[in-house]
Length: 308
Length: 283
Ligand SMILES: Nc1ncnc2c1ncn2[C@@H]1O[C@H](COP(=O)(O)OP(=O)(O)O)[C@@H](O)[C@H]1O
Ligand SMILES: [Mg+2]
Image 1 (cartoon, rainbow over the protein chains, first blue to last red):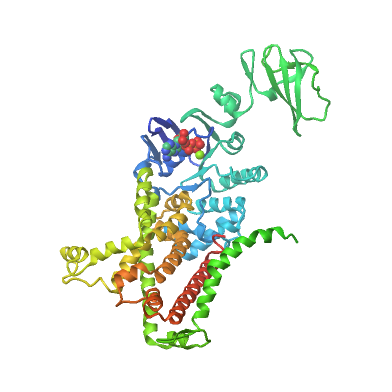
Image 2 (tube, rainbow over the protein chains, first blue to last red; image 1 turned 90 degrees about the horizontal axis):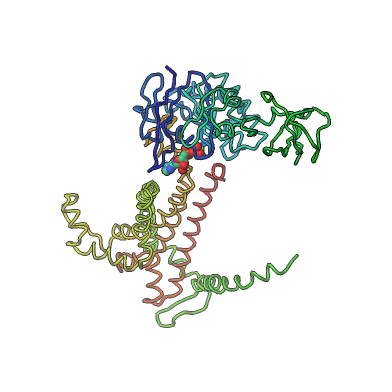
């Protein structure tokens, strides 16, 4: 039996099922990502676990106990909201200490734990600042510290990095992963960014229209997508002669599927090609190794593993 | 330097000077003129009116009453208006619009009509309000509402409440709804969420609503005139009387200017307080 269990969890808004019979088990210490396009029901799922949305049907169990019977304020979960939802009228230390205060932790211990947690997220020097005086990335860390300091049974992250710019996001991904490893908290991440989900999580749940299309390790879902939707959502795909092939698996060879390069785009670490073939337009990604590559209009032959 | 922007401001400035600055300056000037029962207004420069207004205990009492009434009106408006706005904000879609209209609707009705309504409810010992209060066993003898401060406070609070509700409502709109959920997830009960999370964030709204209500209550005319009558004078009804009944315009002008100065001081002070207290947090 898994630590957290969602069983045929369903939420309907009128006739529309935002979450539709979702079943999922999360092990203790595991990092699971709910991945899917906007509106597929990720946030609703998270809000049901947190207790802010009541399921239409289904069950949620945490450590074998019925979570739905417990009030949101008593569930002891750490939540990082997409908007961060920091308390604007409180300093960083007051924000982070609020949960401990609610638990009745004594002031001295509170100060120690707030300090430790802020160190963990790299904000040890910012205790007296107000949220408005901090950058998006720093506010993000405060929100993370506020959720972690109460030593939650589960950490719920709703698109925590989507408000950061691309560079900062990558840095935060690495940091988030390290922090989660350090504290070992069971974590559920909601995101629409497949790179983020694959980079961070032990397993991903690819969702579409309220249903889980595939649950498994990122690598497995990428290599062996259960449905065309999963294949497309996790990365670029080509449909060549009825077979699905990832663009980076296709190489230029002396013989193979004949075609002509229509466009060639340089993207730093790789080249992105679109090749006209007899059957379809094929996308090809080749690593930039410094060697000379075919140019636009060149005749090429495409080869990939599994192709005779 | 370009002249065009300044030239374009001229019409508005002329209008502003014409309708605000000039009459105001003339009122200030008037308050230094002399007046006599038979000689009328004499354009001389004397301090008689100011000495009277600042020195006579009658005026002290009247100004104290004016600001006491304004204070209690503001307090009541905040006490009832802030929760009203909060409840309104939590209502669902059709009801929210309907009740917003119910609350703001009175603004469309003349103050005089609304106050006369209160006069009818208060009127005499058999007024509806007294009957209701006695019927509920809250009081044993009828309370005097007409021509009393309590009556003026009650009626003015009703008249000015929408301004408080609007100000608090506006600051509630800026609240991130997830912030309340964040507090709940951290273990806060409903009352703690209200006191520690919501109230501090709408405090600037309550304060700005309070400044508006205070200023309007202290300078209100129709309601104190109808409910307070001639027995219970406040600054604005007194100035009115001096201008139109006694015909002592200079004295009336001194009262009016003093009321204006006191209000400016209160508003300025409140603004300073809000800025100093909240600049860091809500920049
Ligand atoms: N309170 C609500 N009332 C009606 N529909 C809602 C409500 N919340 C979410 N939905 C709908 O449920 C679906 C899933 O929403 P959500 O869980 O927020 O998606 P995601 O987080 O994956 O983008 C959407 O179609 C959304 O419009
Ligand atoms: Mg969402």
